[in-house]
Length: 139
Image 1: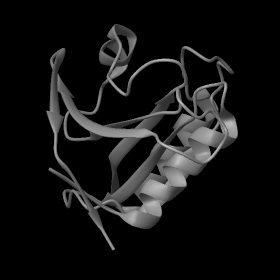
Image 2: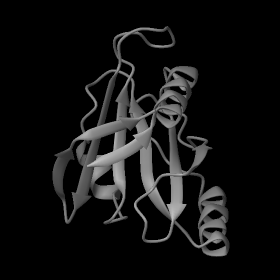
Image 3: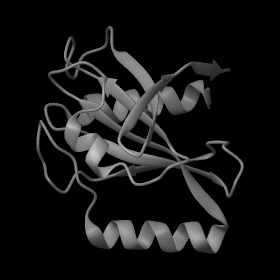
């Protein structure tokens, strides 16, 4: 189960809406080994694509150096889908390389940049296997 503060859910959704029609992406870091998302890190989608996201390699290197310096792990790795449901694509599964991370997807297909309904779902992805998990939003 992913336990995540409401402020992070709102930040992810806001990022997804702001970047629509391109996919948004980012990370929430937490203390190493804790499974507690605590530091929101929106990233730039270097692909600038409505169907694919990619972290800029230099940004990713900087991010992992920050993780090492702060004794953190990537607890949540998120991105948006702009025209499909919030479910991992084959490409998402191929690129899922953090076995302990929660992979969060938010879909903005219904409302785009506007307020309104959205899908917010979380998965564990390990060895190509997708397992959806419950999301508990903390106030």
